[in-house]
Amino acid sequence: MSEQESVGTPSEDVYAEGESTGTATAIAPVEESKPLFTDEEIQQFDADDVEVGGAIGKMLAVFFLYTVCAMSHVAYWTFYGNVNTLFIGFTVIVMSIVAWLSFNSGG
Image 1: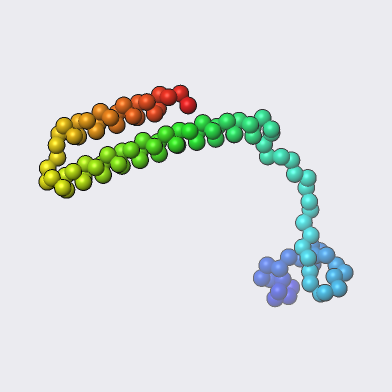
Image 2: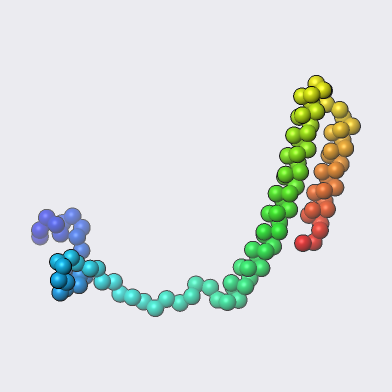
């Protein structure tokens, strides 16, 4: 056994013979591939993508609104030095209504 074969070189029968350039090309058996998914499964994936995309959009909208409200609270707190409980209550009510409408819109 030569040193080259002992380090993991494949045996000579897996290489194409007759190459004029002196390089070897590996030959692997080619199997016919079948589609991974049927047309019905692909249509279901598309429908699921639309549904999930809508849910992600709603979540992003609610989180953005929450961020704007939290930012306004911090700005108010920084500017006036205290937090007005009426301002917090109003924001909590508005956020609750927006979240409820967002998730119950049916879309």
